[in-house]
Length: 408
Image (cartoon, rainbow, N blue to C red; front, side, top):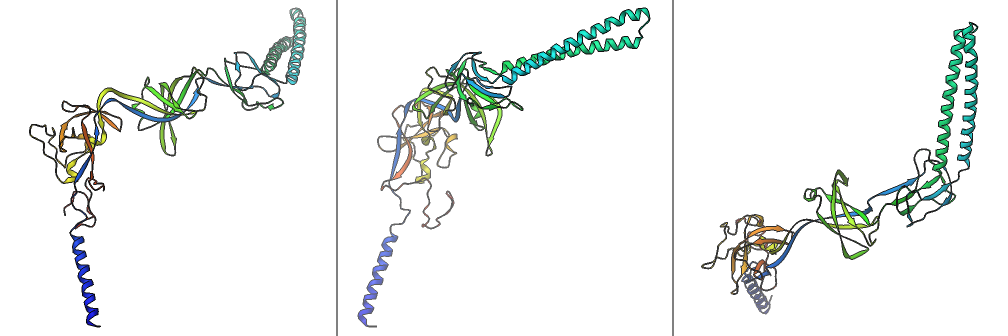
């Protein structure tokens, strides 16, 4: 290899070494100027809510069936018809039922004839017994025949009443005032009532009074109580919010795919008739509420500047310190009672607060030092745009990849 070639290689090596040195002067974990993310303290309402889904239904729904078998000969009600109590809805073909009534009447007449004959036979035996011409056995036989004839008459009367009742059942009438929401038969269809009564119509008593059957998770059911206000929406009217009131919390659990829930009945007013049975509703139960209070983002209570910067800003002279005396290694936000406010010079100032009700996004607080419009710190970012997560460890730095708080 020539001297020229060796010279070129030496220059390349030197350039590479210089590049490595320069890159090493800018490590990944270089301290960066921090910019704090803030949000203003607001005044408003904080509502603790529980969400659930459910189905709308009429308060009273009656399934009208048939107790006798037969063929539908006529229908007098259809879907959405308003019906009155005892109004005729349908008629079964009464031909065979009328024949049964006629047969039962004939059986009753035959039983009555047999009864009269038994009475005459018994009456003839009584004088013979007084004259000693009839034995006691003969008297007992006529009395037994008389009792059997009387029983046969009662049996025939019961059979006739049963046949007449079945004939009346051939005329299907509405048991309540309401609206027909379902019709399950057509003219000419045969209904069989051998084992159970087939459903012919489904009638809702009053659609201006409805109920929402909501499934509430077992983790939230303890916060539900009778009388709570409920807001819900349906897909048919996504921009409109309907209201209701908790009427009942049913004790029977429902388990679907190992998830336990409880049915909560919500009373709903439906004067305009917009809500229909079977609609799916997304409900929100108002568990607790605080109105016209100072509220801050939940992230402000979680913010701890010591975790990201390695230090906690000292309080300025005359300013209140953390009442719990907590530093960068303090307990979680739920046990802390201070937030950090950004002052006009860009510094941080701890302000004691007393947390109240929280809806998961905002927390109601009370404080003698916090005012509406103050900027509370909720996080921080690097000045060059790269996010500066609190407690992040550079995996390429010496000792990288260890857990937060571990020794290096």
